[in-house]
Every structure is written in structure tokens, then in C-alpha cells.
Figure 1 (cartoon, rainbow, N blue to C red):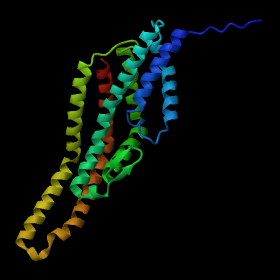
Figure 2 (cartoon, helix red, strand yellow):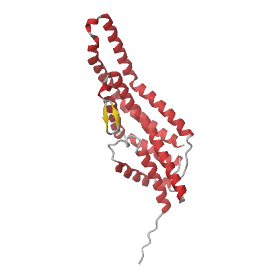
Figure 3 (cartoon, rainbow, N blue to C red):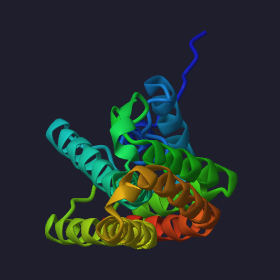
Figure 4 (tube, rainbow, N blue to C red):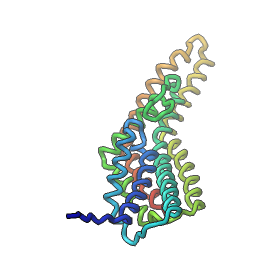
Length: 255
């Protein structure tokens, strides 16, 4: 007695292409891209999410030839990586703001290699990055990111192609916006520390024997810690706004 198990090859192909897009996205987009998440966990999560969205990607899908399938595979890798990079740009604004604070406050000298990021990172850069990551999970902001990415399958099916003119313009705009956001977050502290340096310089000119710059180190540390604390208190609102921007960029980048 033989057992006939029907296999839906179209469903397997469509779900596999969706898994490829998810994998490229998760390996680049925060918070999933950090090395604290093992690669096999990211791959398993990508497959699981692809199965969840299979009802979106399989209707109307027809099995492709070998050449067409590899072309669709390449396009999904490109789309997932592009959307992941857009999310990374948004999230990098917070870490860049911390690095600017370290540069102005003198903490940049204590930078060290961060294995999670795979790069040199300064103290406030790491603190802001880890705090934002924690807030993103606690506030379910990561669900907004994934929801925006899932909606990209409606705008751009797994067999669709992408016009690079639109995404390139979007990348340029997102990069400039990231730089502006970093300066807006760290700008007040940078201005206060600059005025503190200017005041110490004037004090040195008035009373050279006072050695005001020796007093400047503990003063700048105190100012940096105090003002950075106010930014940390505002991080939940900042991360919430960035998470909403991420969802909008993911939808816009796929169109």
C-alpha cells in the first residue's frame, strides 16, 4: 500500500523566497543584526516569519524556471538588505548622538571594541545603543519594524523587481536625516560643553594662576553626566518616533 503525500512546490518556492528576504533583513536591521543574536537563531526566525506570511506571498504564485528563480532569489536578497539598511540608518542616529557627546565631553579616549557591533564604540555610544535596544523590545517597537517589513510583500511581491532610482534617493534622504537627528539629540550638550570650554578659556586669561583647565576636566564630566541623563530620560519618546519612522521607511522603500 503506497502513501501519496501531495507537495505544493509553489508554496515551498514562495515561502523560501520570503525567507531569503527576511534573512537578509534580519542580518542587517537592528535590533536583530547584533552579534548577540546567533546566526542560526536569525535564520530560524526568518524561516518562521516566512511561514507566517506565506498566506500573503503564495496567492497567485506560479513555479518559476531555474533562471527566473535565481533572479527572484537575488532580488529578494537585495530588497531585504536595502530595507534592513534603511532601518539601520534610523537606529544609528541614537548611537551617533552618543558618540558626539563622548567627543565633546572627552570620553572618546576610553572607546573600546564592541563585539556586538563589530566596531569601536565609545561609552555613551554604547550606553545609548543598549538603552535604545532595551526600550525597543520593552515597548514592542520591534513589532512596528516587522509589521512595516511584512507590508513590503504587498507593495513588492517575491517575484517582483525593484527600480533602484527610488531607493537610492530614499537612502540619501535617510542618511542626511540620520545625521540631522544625531546632531539634534546631542546638540544641546555639545553647545553647553563648548560654552564651558570658552568660559574656562576666558577665566584662564583673567586669572592665569587659577589653572582653570585643571578644573575643567571634572567640570566637563559633571556637565556631561548630568545633561546625558536628561537625554536618557527622553529616549523612550525618541525611540518611539524612530520606530514609527522605520515602519514608514520600510513601506516607502519597497514601493
